[in-house]
Length: 476
Image (tube, rainbow, N blue to C red):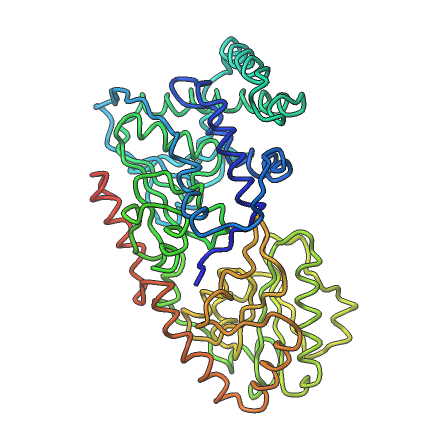
């Protein structure tokens, strides 16, 4: 069974990214290859649109090709060892990126960095390393000159010789130079013993990992979200803390060394096992529906185009409508959505729908009281599994570069709907015999739960902090 979908376009885009890293590998600043700090933006903005610049007769991606992908990205990465002279007068600290604050590490032990922070009043106080130093314009001019010299070589792929590409690459330099200088300043002024992030995709993330490797400082990434194949670009630190065996199988399928992984869990989900959630009678009173009705739940996702949510919701409403007297359909707007996909005038036609557009009701209260939870590729699907609620994976669309619609649907242990007919069958079975239908779904799902997620006691935060402390020596 394939655990991750990588199509030909994706592979060729990674291959073009490999050429980008190789062609510009000798353009460095403080021994950091600047092209590698651009890897994510190059891949999604340039490689995906220009992968045809590499000719290929093979349009089908083999398993052997998939296993080479990690090497395509990281085999040519060179790290020059540098001495690290920390400020020994300062206490031991670790650098943390945004989202890792879910670990509840205080500022006595951690320095929180975010290259895109806009408000210095955000808590914990985030430092933008690029704002700590002025731009070294002399260095910028030198690097721009080197980029143009490399790009003029007629042996490099056509895309690298184009004016548009050169302009794009040169525009990235100022931010990257300031990030390198700013992060170096943080290392010099402090006694850094480790870096902990959720990803190493963006410029700051990559630079932090590379500087750690130069100075023999451990780097750790923590999987906090369900990821698309972009996850592969975050496999360069020393350790990768993951949910369970499922994600190890996904990444080792792409050639990632298995020794990088540590199965510990996810601190975001600890509350599932430790907190108490509303019962169905309480939720029914709050949302004003009869407690004997079957509850179907769908959490919207902040996807573009919005038509993706619309297609899914239309299908669900169409399937549920014949049973509208027996069911309540709860829809929750995602916090990052400006507005729900469904308008108020649309909702008035369907009184059995309850739209939750605020955070007054907690997500886990809604999942915990649902008879079935529908999802595409959201963490809500995993959260439903952890709360032992029947989860249906809706897989109506082809996998995309940043959306893996088949994330759950690949597994035969997950009940999936690939079209409207299958969706109708699942809902009809649930209406006709709820007990039997739930049992059938959960029987398989229980096995899948052990495969996809390690922790069943809500101790992930504690165990991850202990792992970080053991690796870095920093008391947190």
